[in-house]
Amino acid sequence: MSRNTTRQSLTRGLRRLSVAIRPPPGHLDGAALARVSLGCCLAVLLAGVLVAVSGLPAHTGFTLIAPFGASALLVVGVPNSPMAQPWPVLVGNGGSALAGVLAAQWVPAPLLSAAVALGAAVAFMFLARALHPPAGAISLLPAMDPDILTGLGLRFILMPVLTEALLLLAFGMVWHRLTGRVYPFRQPNETPRAAQQFSPDDLEAILERLRLTANIGVADFGRLLAAADEMRHADTRTDGLTCADAAGPVADVLTPDTPLAQARDRMLAVRAYSLAVTDGAGRLVGVLSQSDLLRADPILPQAQVAGAMTADPVSLPAGAPLRKALSVLAEGRWRAIPLTDPDGRFVAMLSRADLIGVLAYRPGSTSPLQPRSASGIAEP
Image (cartoon, rainbow, N blue to C red; front, side, top):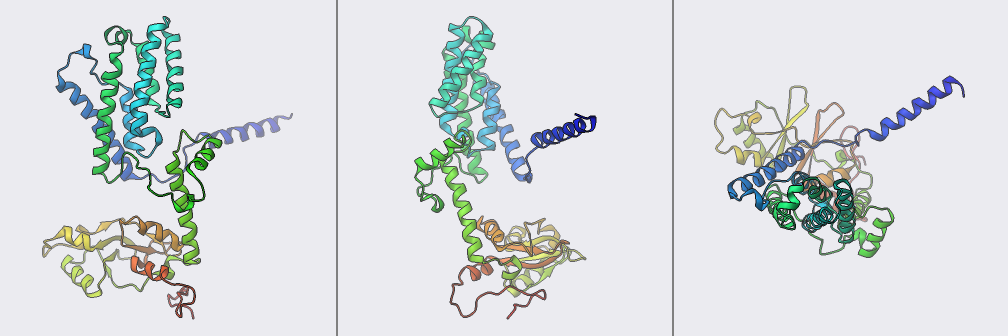
C-alpha cells in the first residue's frame, strides 16, 4: 500500500471518527435549558436544606448523596423518560442499595464487592422494569465507603436512599406543575390513532426488537406514531399549500416607537388579535398581542410598543409548508404566526382563523383555496 493510500485511509478514518463523536444536531432551547438548570439547582438545594435543618445526627444516615444529583437531572430534565418515572426512581434506587449492602457484607474484597454489587443491581433493575442509571452509583457506595456498612447496614436503604428519592419525586411533581409540564407521565386513556392498528404488546415487541425498551416507553412510542400520523394527515389536508397561501391580507404594521395607546386603537379598529412590529427596513422585530396590552394596563401616555411587545417571536418563512404552521398553532401558545421573506422582512400574519378556513374546506366546495401568485393575489 502506497503512502498516499495510507494517508487517505487515515484521513477517512479520522473524518468518520469526528462525525461519530460530534454532538447530535438540534436547536438549543434556551428556555428549556434555564428551566432544567434551575430545577436541578433547586432540587439539590432543597434536599440539602432539609438535611441541615432536620438536626438528625450523622449515624442516622440522613446525608446528601452524590447520585441524587444524577437522579435530579433525569426527573427534572427528561420527565417523560421511562427511567425518570416514580417506579424506577424508588424501586431502582432501593433495590440497588440493597444489592450494594449485601455485596459489601458477603464479599470481602472491596473491588470485587463493588463489581458484584453493580452487576446484581443492573440485573435487578432490568428484571423489575425499574432501570434508573443513577442507582448503579448507589450500589457502589457501600463497597467504597465502609462506614456505610458498619454504621447503617440495611438502614442505608431507607435513609438516605429512599428518603431522598421520595423528596425528589415530590419536588418533581410540584416543579413540573409550576412550569407547565406533566409529571409523572400519564398513560393515555385511548390508543393514538396511528397506533390503533397495533396493540401495546405489538409496540413493545417492536421496541424490544430494536433494543429500545430501555430508552423509550410504549406510551411515548405511541405518541411518536401519532405525531407522524398527524403530519401525514396535515400534508393531505393542506394539499401542498404554503403558509403564504393561507394567510390573510396584512391588516396593519407597528414600529417599536409607536405609542402604545395608538397601537391599541389600531388593533381594535382592524379587530386583530396581534400585530407585527417591524423596524425601518421592514424586518420583523416583535409582535404586539392583546395579551401584551393586558399586561401593560394601565397604558401610560409615554408608553411605546417596544416596552410591551413580545420580542423575537416565533415566525415562519412565507414559503414554508402549511403543516408547519399547524404544528405551531396546535401548541396553543400562539394565535397567529408572522411570516417573513428570506431577508427577515415581514410579509403577512397567519392566524388560527386562516387555518380553520383551510381545514374546513371539503372537496366539492364551490370556492376552494388556491395558491397565491407572486403578487399575493389568488390565481384563478
